[in-house]
Image (tube, rainbow, N blue to C red):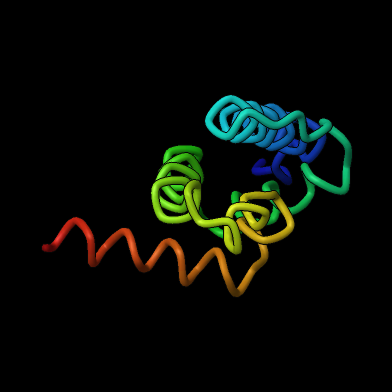
Length: 101
């Protein structure tokens, strides 16, 4: 008999992946965003919607390149901006254009 997916296991895996993404963000931009639900849930939501850990890391890397030297935009290198549902999809879409050019 087919059962329901093991939800606690899936949630644990998502949290582990979200922590990996947040650690990558901290490392790349030299910040110390804490591993709290406020930050992790944004990343977990993107992973649940089909993004991969690599997609998340690619968005971080691209936005870092775009914004790190810009005094106005550099403060937006944060989980609330990068992993906002609408913004993340836009940033992910930018990667496709970059790869095509």
